[in-house]
Image (cartoon, rainbow, N blue to C red; front, side, top):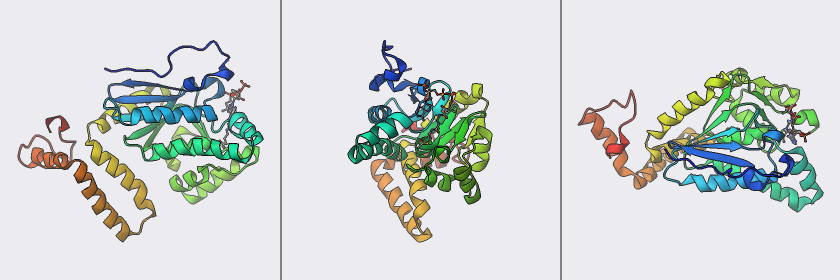
Length: 290
Ligand code: ACO
């Protein structure tokens, strides 16, 4: 077991003055990087400091050999209460257009980075998830929520449209009528309803959530990592393609994957056809034997 935490020393500062490095925490345990929004006293809303620190943490973890899967969750009662209305909106707006654009680049930058991350990613939504939080929620490949987690496009409640990608996320993941209702009404839905509406894969009682996420992460970590990266990117890319374009892209994507790892899929065929040690219809080949 390897373990490393980015949150080293408790700070003597007031929570509102949390150092930038302390706004995100993580541990790596048995191949899973558990990354946490770490401003529980502010319900993990995303400030410029947090956005910058999250990008550093993603950078650090992306190509580490001891990380197979990244889980994004929140410290305390929230996953993320969206953008920090004070530090992300009011204070950057006071700094003028340049400051606003800089803050947007930092936030959108790490969400984009996460959408195309090298490793498979899982959102483990333990509590509140609002507005801007839909950016990282969508960026994660899979999402699992606590039954009583609360999801909301609350922008309309304080007088803006769901921006920063949130409207796009709702349209991508939900049927039109539900997305429209969600954006206009500003009402929250719980984890179970979020499954029904397509925002997350599954919901579980809070005390069982981590165990289920760990189980899924362990399955992912046994698959061929080159195939996982190719499959997750393809799933996002084909959404905007015609059938013919997708067919062509997928041929090229597999050929490109072969240039990184031609041996893996041949071993997968061999262990089934020749060795008869597994059945692909029932599970993954043993990549340790390759
Ligand atoms: N921006 C700035 N500060 C926030 C945010 C936020 N998004 N969310 C919570 N906080 C702060 C509160 O101001 C409070 O600070 P204080 O202790 O200095 O007074 C602290 O976090 C705790 O928040 P409470 O409201 O006291 O916590 P409570 O558990 O009662 O309520 C809830 C939680 C429902 C999440 C509430 O904090 C809330 O409505 N937050 C805003 C949610 C939201 O609409 N986010 C913006 C989405 S739109 C977008 O992201 C673009």
